Length: 308
Image 1 (cartoon, rainbow, N blue to C red):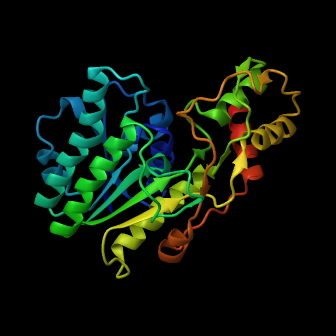
Image 2 (image 1 turned 90 degrees about the horizontal axis):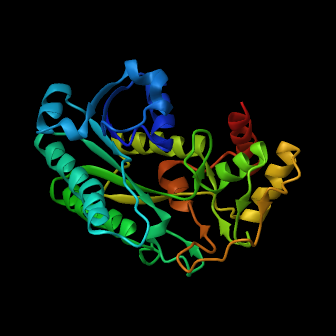
């Protein structure tokens, strides 16, 4: 299959590229010219890639390569307080850019689109989060994600573009961004001081291999007779774990004392996620997907990667 991929140089994208290539897919990657390709350096000669800031007309890519599926992972996140440039950057990357791809997709008869969302879009105060949970965006970034999803729904309905959105929950693993798990591992490995909050917040940590399998299952779903209309799927582990629990597991895995990690040294911000309890029953029922990697196993693999 010919797959047009955005966000392929990122954490999730690099693992997805490896999986797609192993399944003999052709990948057409659209990236920024400034993107660091360290995560995909070993695969760069096996894919076709274009720099988005050098492209005058996306139609030429569609005409030349005839992709059958678009997987949209790209996004840009800016922290509050925002400048006017921050807003413009997020609007361009998170709304305008993928909207242009959808327009090309319809004109060039692309069959499938897989969009990537985030649990930040949900109201997290209502117990277990399902796909029917109230939408209550955390910040401007999530507003842009919701805006593009609204556009995608329109194209899925009006132009019969077979589409789904996978809303990801606290993915982690090898080659991750600077999130809490790799930061704790770095602190344990190099005895660097890390200041954390009280560590009592619970999150739905989902190992990267399971996340990638969700995208592969989504492709199969879109290609099958099971697809009837646009769908949203939560990609999460229904078991939530506290930061303290994760820390204790990493201390045991690493055989370090953990004194470099100081719990309660940082005040809890009202903008932070406090507790997340998720439900993936819909993904299991329709996609045939559920997480299979226990937290201990995923943390061990992640720690060994960073140690090496």
